[in-house]
Each structure stands twice: as C-alpha cells, then as structure tokens.
Image (cartoon, rainbow, N blue to C red; front, side, top):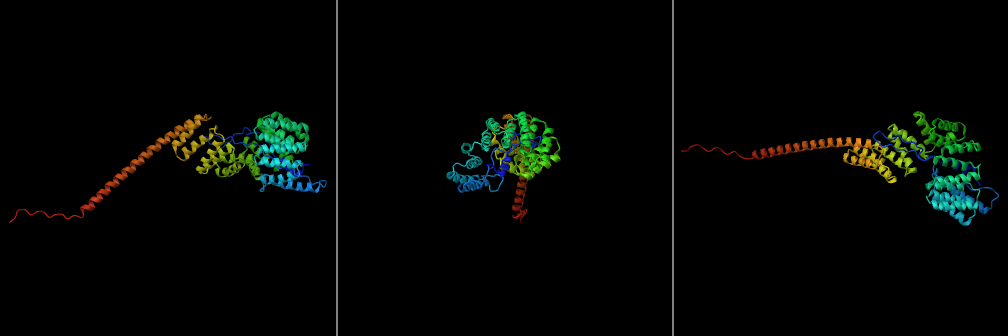
Length: 440
C-alpha cells in the first residue's frame, strides 16, 4: 500500500541525460573549457512508501508500521535529520520481529542504498519483491542500482518489463522515460513520454524528461515550449527546481541571459540540493567573472557530488578568480584523481602557476604535460608555453639586473665603509713635528 506523501517524495527523483552534451562556458580563452553539465536528478532512492495506517491491521503490525514510518522519516535526503544508518537500525528491529512486511525490507534496501551498500540493497529489494510482487517500487529501485553500477541497459530492461506489467503506473513510466533519455534513445523517450502523458497529464517529471529529450535532440524551441507549458499547466511545476533549471539552460542556449539567470536563480532558491541548478547558475557567474558567487554554488555542488570531475575543475577556476591559489591547486589535483586520463586540469594548473604565481618553469611543465597527454587545445597550450618562456627570460634578465644592482650597491657600500674606517683610523694619530735643519 502506498501513501500520497511517499508518492510525492518519489516523484521528485529524476533520471535524465548523462552530461546532456552541454559544455560549460566557465573557461576564458586561455583555459581548458569545463563540460560541467551534471546528471539530471540522481540514482540514490528517496524514502519508499510509508506503512499503512488502516484499522484492519493488528496491534502488533500497527506498532511495526509506526517503526517503519519512523525509519522513513530518517531516509529523506532533503531533511536535516537524514540518517540512513539510524533508519537501518530501526528497520533491523522491525524485520527481526515482523519478517513478512514487504515495506520494511524495501526501506531497508533504501537505507543500504543510501549508505553505498549496493549488494545489501539489492538483497533487501529482492526480499521485498518476493513478499509483494505488486510492489512497483522494487523494479524502480532495482533499476536505480543498475544505473549506479554503470549498466543503464539493464536498468532500461528492468523499467520496460515493469511498465509492460503495470502500464498505468506513472512512477515506473517516469523512470522508463528518464532512463531512455539518459541512454540517448531520444526518439523512443519522446514517444514513451507522450504516451505516458495520456495516462497522467499532471506528471512534472514526464514534462521535465520530455523537455530534456528535445534539448538533447537539439530542438531547443520545442524544449522551451515543453518546460513553459509545464509551468503554466501542471500543478507543482512552477515550484520544481528541475523545470526552472532546465528552462534556464534552454534560455541560455537562446542567449536570453537575463531570463536564464532568473530561472536558474529560482531553481537554486527552490532547492539548494538540486545539482543541475547549482552548476548551471555557477556557469553564468563564471562567464560574468563573478567568481565569489560561483565559489559558493560550486562548493555546495561539490558537497553533493564530490567525485564530479567538471565541478572540481570549475571550482578550481573559481578559487583562482578569488585569489585562493592553494585551494585552486587542491581542486585541480582532486579532479586529476577522479579522472587521471583527462588533461584539462594540467592546462589550468599551467595557467595558475605561470600566470598567477609567476612560477614560469612549473607552469611550462604543466602545459607540456597537457600536450603530452593529448589535450585537444595543444596548439593553444604551445603558444602559451612560448609566452611563458619569453616571460621567464624577461624575468631572468630582470633578476640578473637586480642582482647586479644589489651587488653594485653592496660594493659601493663596502667602499664607503672602508673609507670611513680609514678616515676614523687616520684622525686618531699625532702628526710628528718636522726635524730641525742644521744645528749649532
């Protein structure tokens, strides 16, 4: 049995295109661009259905359901009391005394999933499915596990089979459409989204996925139409961080920057944990050289996804813009640890060392590493190296002149000291009288 509250929570979980083909404009011409578009939504599940409160259940079961609801309250990642470990402890007690309650196993799977125990989550989901084969959240969450394991093909197969079995289950259809967009099966995603909207015309997530599909297909005007139609006709869409963030993306591509900034700002105001909103708004700030505000957004984005290469790279650029050079270097190094094969951090490290720290040798070395790693802008890096080598020679000549000046000053000071010493010594002696000439 599902409650309306739990369905609303699940409706917020979105799937979408991986990176979406959007390139971040964060970099200046001398920087390696950062393609920072994040995944739409996420793969970690939110709370599963809360337990039924029907008077038909026994007192013992009612007590167990109260405990399940207590655990569910700890599994909402949007709440300050989010505590999957605490939820797991509560659910372990429930399952020990009431092993046949499917929602207890399902929520145990959610707790393990949120804690990163994917194998344990899978086992709990399967137990829930064995107990209640009509529990549609099981294939939904099993699909999420496949997505997180890097097998979107298996996730899609899971969703398709579930939709064929329960064609009117809008949550499963939302997952299927989102998975198709993420897998790049755009035409099929559009077809499935339109078909699903016949089942439920008020699904914010379906409109969001349909708009993303058009966006990924390059049909920008249609994407804008879908997002704006959702805002104007679907209840709750105007309060959706995803709708505002993706409408902002579209408007940015149409170079309507004031309205793009409005909708991206609105997205962040609605949900500071919605990663695409944070990243796309930070891109606009980086374009405007508003590095201070970009830092704040990207630090929040990093807290949500600390393994996102492009977030780390752009955070380094933002730190450099606020003269926090050590933090910039640390961010680039983190990015390199995430993706050692991507040379972009070496480009930006070269700029940081060569341009800002004036360590020309270190900057040249980083840029040469970028070229050696096959960086796409090797020609730009080579010209940059030429410029740094010229600056290095100029700096060396300046250093030599400065050393010569200091040496000349030191020598002059030493001569002056010796003259003063000689004068001091001469002033303390008596001058002998001249010997008399002749004599008596």
